[in-house]
Image 1: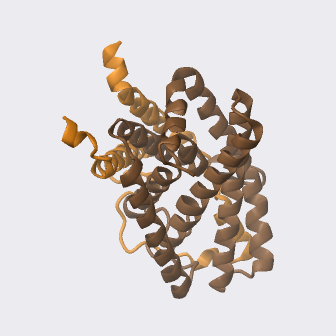
Image 2 (image 1 turned 135 degrees about the vertical axis):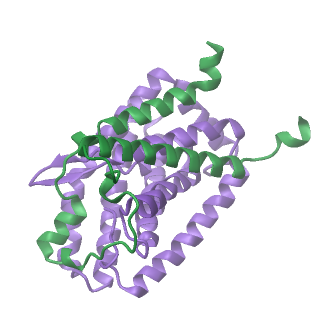
Image 3 (image 1 turned 30 degrees about the horizontal axis):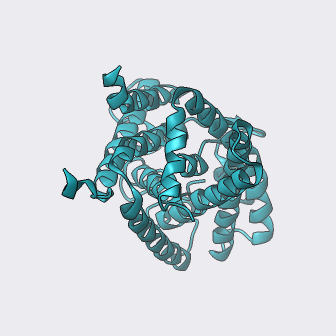
Length: 220
Length: 100
C-alpha cells in the first residue's frame, strides 16, 4: 500500500505531510511522558520484526500480493503512541533507503499506515477487549479484527487520497482498494494472531507489561 | 538464565533477522495498490525516485539475487532496529535519573 510519487497531487501531498507531522509530533510527546527505559528493547525488536515481515509478500487471489503492515500488532504490543513512532520509522527507512514509497508521498503513507492504521487498530483492539473481557480467545479475536480493519480502512483512506488527487475516481478506487485489501487484511489478521499467540506462550509478561503501561497513563 | 532475562532482545532481533532470510520466497506479484493502479490504468503515473540506494530490496553489487535480497533485508532490519532503539532511548521517561 506504499504510494509512490506521482499518484498524489501537490496539495494532497502537502496536506497529508502537515497532518502526519502534527500526528507524529503528538505521538512523540505522549511517548516522552509514558515510555519506560525497560520498554526500549521491545520497541526496537517490534520495529525490526515489522520491517522484516513487510518484505514477505504473500499471494492473494488474482496475481496480487500483500504483506503485513503491523500497525495493529505494534499498537497491541507497545500502545498506540509508540506504535505510531515504530510504523513511521519503518516507513521512513523504506522510503529513504529502499525507495519503497515516494518521498513526497511519505506524508500520506505515514498518515494511512502509521497514524490511521495504528490508532484504528488500537481503538478496535481496546474496545473489543473491553467488550469481550480478559480471556485468551478475546485477545485473539480482538487482534484479528483490529488487524483486518486497520488494513482495510488504511486502504480506503489511500483511495480517497487518490481520488482527491484526480488519479482515480472515488467510485472506482474505493471499492477496488477495499476489495483487494479485504483479502490482504485476512493475512494481516492471521499473522497478527500468530505473533500474539507465540508471545503469549513464550513471553506472557510482554503482553501483561502493556496492560500495566496503559494503566500508568497510556490509553484513557 | 540471567543473561537471557536481560538480553532477550538479542533473541528477538535474531528472530526478526531470521524472518528476513525468507525474503527471497516472497510473492513477486504486484501488491494491492499496484494491482488497483494497473487495473484502473494509472500505474504509469508512478515516478522514479530521485536517487537509489537499495531499490526493490535488492542490495546492489551482489550478483545472486536471492542473496542480494536477504542482505537488503538484514541491512533494513538492523537499520530499523538501531534507529528505533536510539529514538526510544532519547524519548524515554527520565524518572530514574534523580533516583540513581
